Amino acid sequence: MATKKPLALRVLFIGNSFTARNDLPGLVALLADGAGNRLEHQLLSIGGASLGTHWNKGEARAAIEHGRFDYVVLQEQSTLPIQNATRMHENVRLFDPVIRAAGSKTALYMTWARKHAPQTQAVITAAYTSIAREIAATLIPAGIAWQRALRPPAKIVLHDKDGSHPTLAGSFLAACVAYRALFRGRLPRDVNVDGLTEEQIKMLQSIAGTVTI
Image 1 (tube, rainbow, N blue to C red):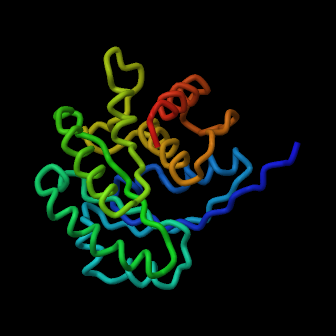
Image 2: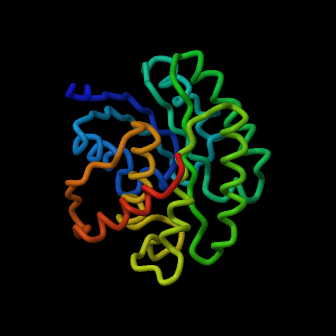
């Protein structure tokens, strides 16, 4: 049987603390290593920023144009898809042509509802799904995985104490979804994450595996 050739990807992540907290790109790289693949990653993060803020600053556009990335992962400010999906879509449309012109692919990192407002996940999901379909982007449906993990009786805490940012478990679940979307492969079985038990890792991987990519 032929050995599957390892896959190496260069990925730029653009977002805010929802991507930076617990080093989401690093967790995806850890999963890639466990599967015999490799992820080179760069993160551009501004606390609380929207994609519009990143666009206006200019650093993200320069990185896209010169970075030779396979994917550029866009994470919108967490409440903008709820408050103004039209503006979110406009922000994504700014980036997508630049990403394509650079020979890269656009990926959209769907975030999750805040702890006190779980009903807003449907709106977040619709906002990301519709624009992903419009521009034929890769969708990373982390928010859907969170929604499933939080169904009663939830056995793990995904929200940090502020009710919005992710715990390590929340970030790892999102990373599992991101790995599946970017590498189009199965999650590695043997992965060690400091701060998570083997049981938690297996449970989160199992949930991520139920989400359609």
